[in-house]
Every structure is written in structure tokens, then in C-alpha cells.
Length: 149
Image (cartoon, rainbow, N blue to C red; front, top):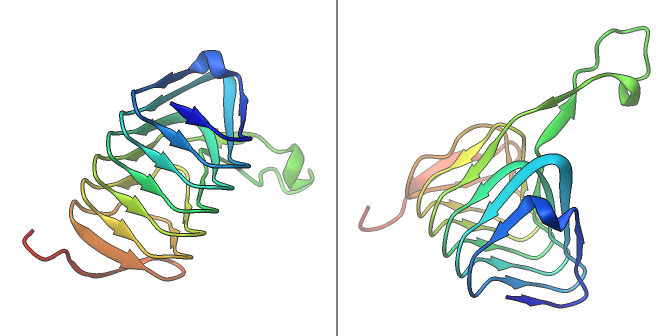
């Protein structure tokens, strides 16, 4: 495992496999009651942000520079309270083996990225991505199946 100028908060909540690379200025934000499993040979690019509340990243996944994975969002309720003071809804995020997350892509809470799927640069993924699918855009939409799938 190679960490270069990265910050890991609550490392005790992480299980990290062999051969994981973490780029410079990446922030892996574990939570006291959270859980994060990062499989073998995952590549986490520079300036990646992982909100590791309930996160599984399987083996041989690539997260491009600046990618963000979010595990929670404010409910926004009740209306008479500032949004930042409302409860957080925590939902698991799963990134299956061989998937590739493009530069500056954002994966929102509750999403599963399928095995071998590709998420385009700058995409905002709001729903599950099937195995071997290619998605891109804001919000991310299906573009095509990977050749041979």
C-alpha cells in the first residue's frame, strides 16, 4: 500500500487490501461508526474524496483524480431548521471489481457501480450502474455497453 501525502481519518474503520495506491492529497474520511473495505490493487487518484461511512470498493477499481464518493446527505427536514442541522441519511455505496470512475466524477449515496462499469469524467451518478455499462453526464445516463460484454 502506498500513501503519498494523503489524509486518512479514523483508519481503524478501514480494511485495505494489497497493492492499493492512494494519490497525493486524497482524503479518506472514515467515521467512528463507519466501515470501509478497499480491495486489492485499487488505484485512488490524487485529490479523491471518500466519505467512508458504509463503503465497499472491490479489487482492481480505478478512481480518477478528484473523484468523490459520498455516503450521506442531509434530509432537509424539517423546513424550519437550517439544512446543515437536519439529520443525515446514510446509505451504502458499492463499487464492484474492475470498475473505473473518471476524473472528477461524483458517486452519490446509495449507488452501486457494477462490475467492469465505466463512469465518465465529471459524471454525477445518482442511480445504480449495471455491470459493464458506460455512463456519463449530469446526471449520469447510460451510453453503451462495453465491447465484449
